[in-house]
Amino acid sequence: MPYILAVNPGSTTTKISIYKGEEEQFTEIITHNIEDLSRFNRASDQDMFRMELVLALLKMQKFPVERIEAVVGRGGLLRPIEGGTYLVNQQMINDLKEGLLGDHPSNCGGLIAYAIGQALGCMACIVDPVVVDELKPIARVSGMPLIERRSIFHALNQKAIARKIAQELKKPYGEINVIVAHLGGGITIGAHQQGRVVDVNNGLNGDGPFSPERSGSVPIGDLVKAAYSGAYTLKDMEKLVTGHGGMVAYLGTNDLRKAEEMMLNGDEKAGLIYEAMAYQIAKEIGAAGAVLSGKVNAVALTGGLAKSERFVDLIRERISFIAPVMIYPGEQEMEALALGALRILRGEENLKEY
Image 1: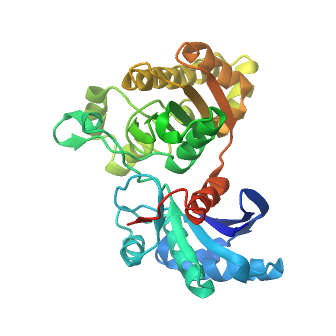
Image 2: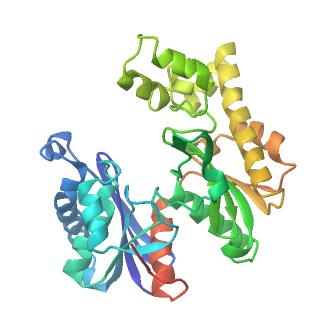
């Protein structure tokens, strides 16, 4: 069974896992000091620093690194690409270093994988980055020629969950239609049609339901008036959309557990906002059902918010007519990375070129 090293860089952590085939051997989280990271101008400049810490940790664990057959990193902000597992090549390295679509810690994923792969003489790859774009042309039309709808979503976790459903249904991912709702700090709801996400909301700063800290779709005329009222700067407006929008704007918390506690203690406003978020999620799932013409094998709820039975039940009662509802609480990012590399090593998929 091949050994695979998965690397997932966050803003102040680098999470690594070793898998032997499908089996997780161990997972460790390296926490970085803010002072250490502040020495670098860009997140993508941290790649060698983080790589050395990863190798040092493996040495401390006395893991025989020569047995690693693939290193897989979390994909960063690259050019739009279809889903799959991609070899880290020079073009990808250039784009990650340049921060083509923005500077983000995930840009280090492919860079770290490449550096370790070079050192060990093994394959370096990424799997299903957030820029996966498989939208149908009809889904790109926004209603305003100035603006095209974009695909920015939790591709790694969504695709992993869709493949799990396919396994449970004993069918290939490319032969099923599923709706996957990733419910976290950002919320994305994807219509997966025969292996491709043909429509999905832009969960970063675009549309869809509001989330714990993002506003989602809002009445556009009022938004334009607010932007030109003189009361807000561009940065203010951007924060209202992403970071300070959604549940946190109403309740002062982005923690669903805290909102539940407030609601159970008789806070009527907390109850309204809590239910409104579930309502909007259910409405977006219903829209995805229309995208798939009602031919849906399953609906999946995943991400951190799916750990709340109360919240899940509010959504389920509105959408259970669409298809069986399957719950996958939390995220499966490390497993998804490792399995993406494993499918290549086993010849089940072709390694794609960026």
